[in-house]
Length: 310
Image 1 (cartoon, helix red, strand yellow):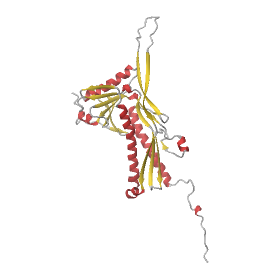
Image 2: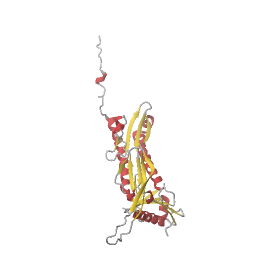
Image 3: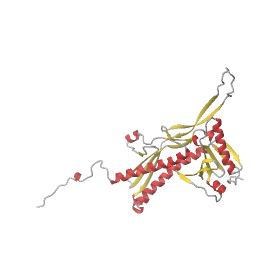
Image 4: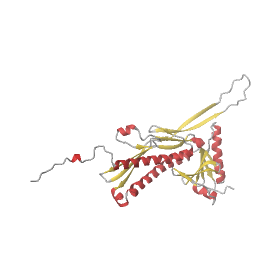
């Protein structure tokens, strides 16, 4: 007679809440995503002179400023009343910062066919690039609304006047420009320099060259039209963000991994068993901005070809 043994399957099951290889891999992937995104953005904002991002509540209106006023003469006779110089700063809402939600899914079939590194890791990188582009495209759209406008005959004169106009504006509102950032069209720049070699660097998807043509930093982009040049003082730029790591989200079961130093983006990944998908979720509310819209120069080169500067 055979003895029938009864096994308690619970004895062989993984302990509840146990951290295994899958959890470690997933957590590392989330940390790598938010850390690399933040470090890439930090590299750009360092160049722009943005020392930190200002935290805003979800749905906050973002305002640009316009400063006006006249400094009265300081030549005052002994005993006479010193005239009062009056200045005012007006704010105008131009945008609203909100948390936005993004999602990506990779099928089990794609992972089986191409392997994890190709199907998941490479699409994570593309996902991150697309999120960067959202931030940059909105920044370019805003910078094009600058109100210091003029038309110049050559590319060289356009760059020079863009720098001159923003420095002059800051002087008039009694602020000192710590430097000037200039944006130019890619084709315009290469038409101007010809075969002259320049050292181009990249940060957060932006190509740039430092200390060139009078600009402290010149950004090179095809987001600008040919013949278009934009400039603003470095200390006119500012960054805003909505914290995606809000504790109330976690209490609601929406726990996103964030960079503890910056909190600029939230990222979470999990398996969707009902559809056999590896899904990724991003939560982001980011804006690169300029405080004074009337300290942004938007110059048009009349020929629209970059010109020779001669």
